[in-house]
Image (cartoon, rainbow, N blue to C red; front, top):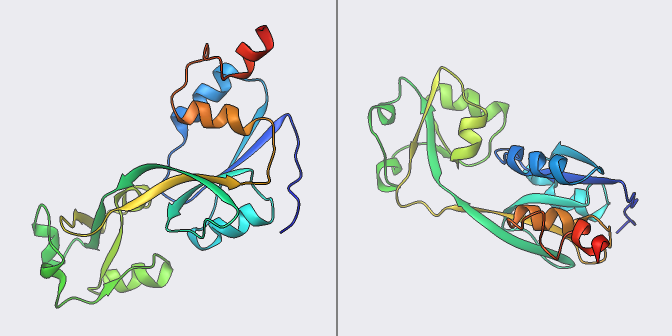
Length: 188
């Protein structure tokens, strides 16, 4: 593993597709003067960017190898079947895995997968991904019995960046007056 380049006035946060950080970025800007750099990270690279220190923290999609990482599970995501609007599944409000038994089912989102969806395949993805990459020619339907995916906030156990605790506090909903925030500690 490389050493992260710790810059005390900048915190670098990665996130996999589908994760929206607006609320946390707003709270960060309201409370701290340090810069928050946010970058989208391909799911396949979520562990690598932490290992090489490209980001200090990353919103990851579980499972991930947790060796040498702290990870706080945050929320579950509903799995959806993403199909062409002409596909019969688009006529339903929701589907089950049994409904997809005779379909060509894909699980990796890339340009080829979307072409295959337009040709009749079904792509299983988290709802947040389908919403973020929404297209007029595609529709998504919840898969009621598919296991959900889970988003977690992860960082290296050896990363001692002074702003990590501040960001974790914001994500966990601590108020600006919490005794665990930088402002309160400085006032004491």
